[in-house]
Image 1: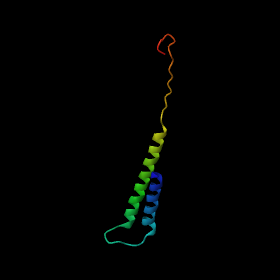
Image 2: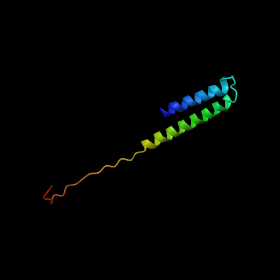
Image 3: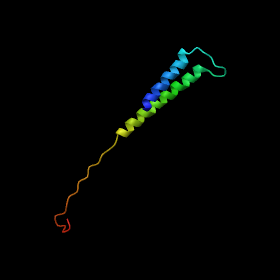
Image 4: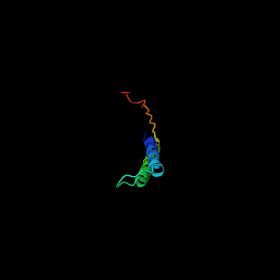
Length: 73
């Protein structure tokens, strides 16, 4: 889900930066678009790192050997 959200932020930022030619007083839409693209890139990278980190789980296998001399076994 985080990768999808990051891609969404990148797409929204690209639309605001390159496709919208409207102007709002006091708001630079091009800069807002660049900020959203950077946030989407960071979100995607962090989610990829977290996914790879969770897959690097080491499993341990233990066995028990019963003592034949143990009268309680």
